[in-house]
Length: 146
Image (cartoon, rainbow, N blue to C red; front, side, top):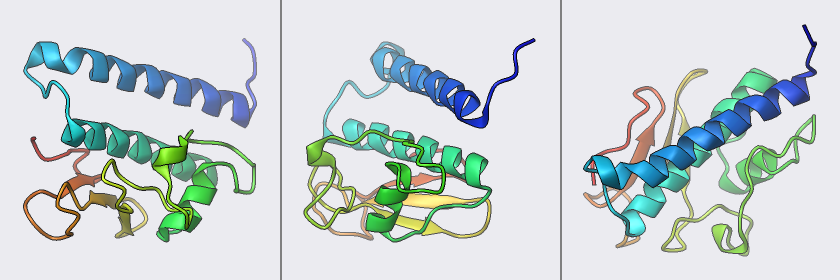
């Protein structure tokens, strides 16, 4: 049996998660899910962010900072092991280095304990705290329905 390094093991887990996310993205329309649109894109982005944050927690035994720009740096390789846990396009960040949703509004991250976090997009109207917000809660691993 081959021994894997932490980095190799992490890459295997991240690769597997990426395949699962790709399968969900490709097959959700066939099972009654949303067929596209900005809300669907935001839900997918939040799921990818949640996966990267969870992987960070597995490797470093804590969550990254809740500051958006700092979290972006942590997930893109500025961490003790220089592991890139997520790949972001140019349009995924703003000039301040913050991850933004499809409407160019920075995501909000809240870590409520050592085992849960919430990712929030302000939604199409770019106003936090109303009905069109897209919220991922790690405690339930759910997004609200579209």
